[in-house]
Image 1 (spheres, rainbow, N blue to C red):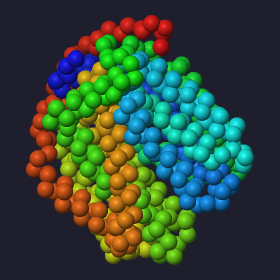
Image 2 (cartoon, rainbow, N blue to C red):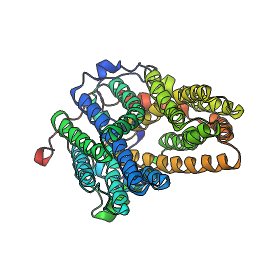
Image 3 (spheres, helix red, strand yellow):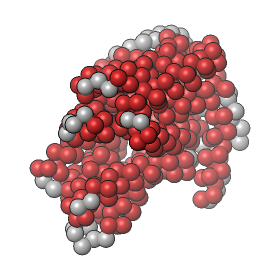
Length: 446
């Protein structure tokens, strides 16, 4: 089984130039399948936050320990590494629609069981174990959805717009999902939040079942058995790292993650040092994803070629407001600085879009899973490093040091950014195969 070249990446209709502007979001939303995927994404991502907040609140009620409650958030991110790396190959082996449906059904069942067991007599480890199990299936859902998007749009400009809108929703859901989960816990109960979470996955399942069309599994031949999943995952890694363009995209995303997470990692401590409440800490945490949501919209209106040329500049611009935090400005000003830093994080939409455009259809699930797994590791490292630096110095200086490191590392590698290669590869992918391959329904209709 050999990888296809990046120039043979995706089948899209129309000999379109890579510098054509993406279509407006409203036009992308006219695509029936994409509308369904949007609703499913909102329901699924908000559901993830409901699970974490619900379990954390339940643990706090039962044990009265803020540390154990915070652990509920931490363990919620652990499965992202293993699920993305080991289960993402399912998004290539199976019909991606089926992967989405199975992931939602399993998560609804597990979270429903969590809601039933949400009583003080339930052992604490049960909550953590079920939460980890439910989160394990978030990774293949995300990998399958990201890999499916290029197939949903015949016009590659529609895909660029759809991917940008998906990135915006991901960031917006971080803010809205946490707020809504907190409200449900406060107004109803932690158990109520878990019930709403299970219902959100059932909603996602129903929408996908109705709106998303059945397609065959992209990967005709694959390694058999459970160990075959690992071999398939390694094959996906080879597809990424053997290609300079795909490798550059993934590596810069992982590198940027180490710096971009620092503000969120110390937000609560920053507010506490200035004598402000947890509310201001929450505002600081929300300012980054809120800015990133705006950034995804802004960059989504720029031609793809221009996005690729601007990408290193955006990464460095992201670091500048972080460096300004060194003077420890008031929390309101800091929130504004971190919002601007978040806006520059719009480059993440470019990375995701370009990676999928340059990846053959039969590898997209594994490549997206590998990228997500590495991002999870980089995020965990960033949280640990920012906390350690905050203890050694201060929360403000920890963020500033992350910004300085980002400027230095990205600046030294700016000359190596393969903008010309990426531009020509993307342009070739857009112009390749004017007529899409005929679609055949897989056995069983899913």
